[in-house]
Length: 117
Figure (cartoon, one colour):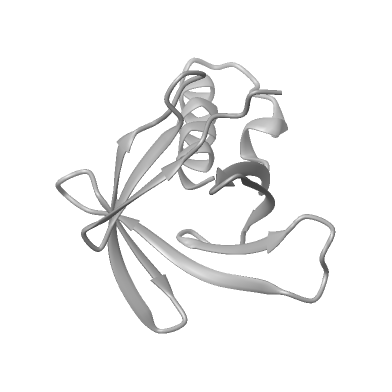
């Protein structure tokens, strides 16, 4: 969701610089994300609350959420703060139909399965 937000902002600014009127959809604040971990599909809603702050909740649940701060590190990693604790994460594979997404968080590898609908 963080990368999607940044990409939308960048494209919005590029279109403005060219003198074009960009669509407002490039600046949308909520993104739906589906992740499959250990055979369980999680449908998340990631809502941008500030420049680096996101509210992450499970789709369909109104009572539980997590606030997180995300910053890009100079080496391409992400510094992610949740509940007062920070971890460094690296996206080692963005994922495709065959492999899924791979993250390294605090030295541990996490593999999200691809969606085989």
